[in-house]
Image 1 (cartoon, rainbow, N blue to C red):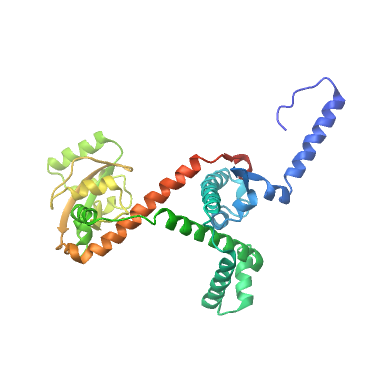
Image 2: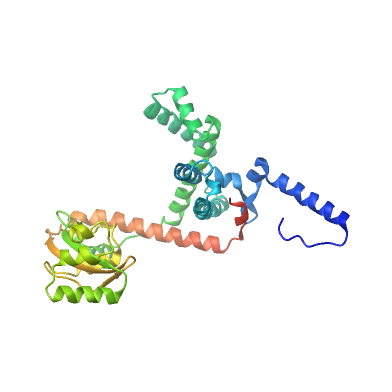
Length: 341
């Protein structure tokens, strides 16, 4: 206990100290930690055990131990990483709890008998495919991950229940979704590069710097005739490409692995041209489009069903996400972050 104020009565200090010590000893037992509340959702508790036994938490701890060792709790960076990630996992558990409560209210919870049957079937398939039905190998693998067969089944069933509940809720919310021909046509006309005979691509190079002023200076050097690769090697902050003249190789028009603002700047370029400064989440880029390869666009009739499926999925996800956020706002949710780690 920190900064205990001096009290006039020595006997009271003694009782107080022993009381606090006793409470801390109880709180620190494994059982007490497991049963401690990390959140409440409309009066229903999520315990530390629920959080720690979540597969995402178990994977997180495994990765942290690999990086920092078994005594990772003695490392401040490791502890901060675990705390941040567990807070995100807890948010997901809270969302799942809200969905489950609403599913119960709407009579959309999955049938438990079928869930257990599905669980047994899927675990049997897992044993067969990965362990050749060898029970000893299977149990050894479970033990290495901190499971018994019983605790693994409990976790598996819980995950299956969460998944099926969300599917039932999604189906209920999105059952009346309709996609019109006009929506399909509008999407097609706005995204033709997604429906080419082969993926359109462009050969790009870039120079990355921290500020717009630096980027403008780089652009002036290039406008004055300096070699792009030479300037990239001198000033680019992208260590992965600078020694290769900033060369990014071929990039598909629809490559989602790149920053959206960077891609917008690159797509606006004609072959053989260099951009003005382009701001992204990484800094400021000067982009060179070395070459473009574009292919014919498929007819609308050939991709209509594909677009319809995509729009249905997008609309469904948006509608479900909006509804879940409404449910969460209407819920009473409290978190006890001190119990997370």
